[in-house]
Every structure is written in C-alpha cells, then in structure tokens.
Length: 285
Ligand SMILES: [Zn+2]
Image (cartoon, rainbow, N blue to C red; front, side):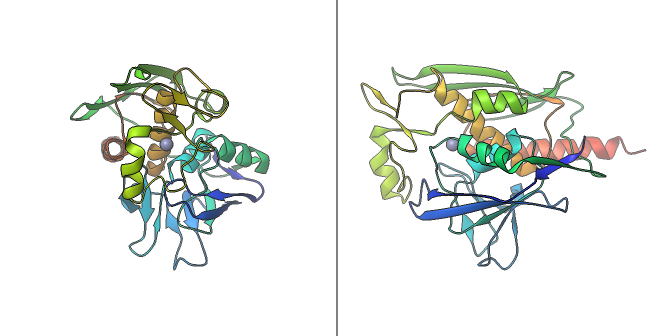
C-alpha cells in the first residue's frame, strides 16, 4: 500500500482546549516519507509526532523537542491517522492546535477538502505481531493480537456516574467508518473536576463550544449528544491519535482496551512498536 499525504494546504483557526490561546494550524503536503510532524518558524527544527517526543499525558498528549511543547496533539493526529495519512507537515502558530468543536471531525473535513494523494514508489510501515501483546496497569487493560481481517478496535469506557456507566464500542476501522462513527465524538469533562483542571492550568479554553460537560444530574452538550455512547467513541478517537505516534499502520491487528487513558495509550504504543520491530527482526531473510 502506498503512503499518503494531502494535495493542497488547508488552514484551521480557533483556541486551544487546555491553554486557551488563539491558534492556527495549516496542513501542508509532505513530499518525503517524514511522517506526521509539526513545523513553525519558531522551532529550530520540525518536531516529529513520534512516541520518543512525548513530554506529557495529563488530560491530553503533549510532544516537544526539549525547548518547545505542543499540547493536546491527539485529536488532530487522530484525524490524519483515521484517514490513512502517513506524511503531513503541520504548521502551527501557537502551543496547541485549536480545539475546534472538541472532536476530530473539523480536522478530518479540512484534510478531505485538501484532497488525499498517494505517493508513488513508497510503502507504509505496518504494525505486525507474532503473538498477542498485553499491557495493564490498575484498572486499565490493553491487548493486541494478529488479525486476518483488517484493523479492529474494541473499547470499554466505564465510569462510576449514573449518567455514564459502562459504554462499549467495536469497529473494523476504515476511513469511512472513522469519519462517520469516531471522528464526530467530542471530548468531555465532569463538572466536579473542572475547577481543579483550571487550577492545574488545564481546560483553560474549554467551553460548551468544544466539550461535553457531565454534571451531577444532566449532561450538557451543544445540540445534544451526537451518539448515546459518545464518551467511549471519543476515547477510541484519542487512542487512534496516540497510536499515530508509532508511525505504524494497524491493518493487521485486533486491539482491545478497557478504561484507556493517554498514559496507558502511550505505554501500549511503545510496547506494540517494540514487538513489531522484534517480529520484523526475526523474519529477516
Ligand atoms: Zn480527546
């Protein structure tokens, strides 16, 4: 399968979810097999969206180069990965992509407007396993196994709140399924934690324009929930964004997780990368 980029530049503007600062991102076609990377005249060099550059996982995934940190990259990366884009330069004006509506759909729609282009003479790197890989910490669990029928994801989100409870989603991933079933799911927060988040310098740009808020007795969502299980779908959107940091394609894996979070996603992604490399090493002629 050929690597993909976009045909034309496309720009989005808004404010960042956690830092609340105005931000503009421009997606640019990438000629080389350089993966997904952030560029800015303010950076000394491009910052690849790779696992080794992750600098934080508190309520979002941050990447950096030791001098600069870019916050909350997962929704934007999820859109690129969900559409099967391998190489993309992301010019960013601030320290965080714009939150847009709290989902990945505005990013995905912008990328589709720019048009997808295959790159002749290139090939995509796949995650491959010879045996299942598991990771668990506290109540969080992950499992990946070889799959003969394309990328499949099963996710359980479980929170002890009477308006949330247990939500379970399962999809065979394709760009069409991603766009329709996963990309529109918005980020969310519990009203009881918002004060503490803001005190910690997070959710400063959060509002009902870009997040669903779960109160004690009601869920506040602009135009209502988009899916009855929107929270589990958003967790899957986040996982796809975090797994994009591997630079690998997950077409040959079936992935299951219960109660995932960004820290667990990154640890799991590292484990998958290591096992995939080990398998390739063993299968060298
Ligand atoms: Zn998210």
